[in-house]
Length: 254
Image 1 (cartoon, rainbow, N blue to C red):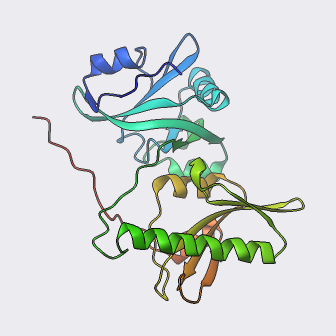
Image 2 (image 1 turned 180 degrees about the vertical axis):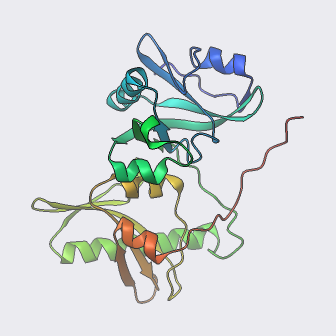
């Protein structure tokens, strides 16, 4: 991979063109190789994890090439005139073209102008440490997480599944469980409380929409007497309110 070791956090439009091989499209290519993403949140408010694309055969081909290549590329998001911010390195994970998905993610864009929805993952998903004390210190969170994983692993094995650890693979879930032709992609959340309360990354939520077999397992009282609750993606959306815990802040460009 011939990428720079460190991508500049803020660049001008000209600098971005040099970094991503130029062009005006949001999926940047050179010699049919995907070089980077240049996104506007006014058009794609859930970017970089979710990109609604349109514009005909050329843009469809770029999206499909991005997915097929499994390239890891830098994603820059426009802050203001002539200023772009580096959001991380991203890989495409799925394309969906069904009416339900397009309607869900189109925002203010007309359905007839949309060719599909591209889902991506951050290959180095950032973590948030500013939990305001509600989720304990790092050592406590790690202990609760390990207890929850252990409880769900045992639960799945007790139900006849063979389980594989995927926690370090940045794939949007923690455990892969298979029983015959059936499989479960288990995202595990743990808490010492008797009530379910947890943090969910944008990457994890995006995978809940695209990965068949994705399930959320919430383990309450994880370190004392584990109680496991299981949700499909739709059940999760119906059962929980999603509230932002923090914002990333940067100096305003004047």
